[in-house]
Image (cartoon, rainbow, N blue to C red):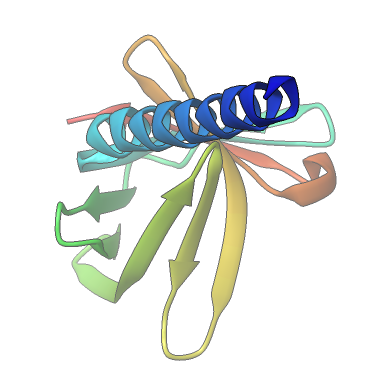
Length: 126
């Protein structure tokens, strides 16, 4: 009987962990939703800001699609795809590329960090 009680406790702990993990991912997804504009890129300890004539925006939608827009002067380039968020790992998929980055939120800012700290993009919410 004691063995059954231990198994039941472990099962409940596992289920609770899965539910809490799911709630955390859902909360992160809700934070991610909306439109974000690139403020700066940090690579190798150097901070680079886009010049005024360049704007880069990303929009994450509830239906798990995203759209990226880059405007250089009057020229506009867009890219679309799908996204998933598991914990702090955001994966974006386009027909040509799949990329996973680490997501963090600092105040009203979204930070996307490439694996092995190979660069970070910092966005502000619009």
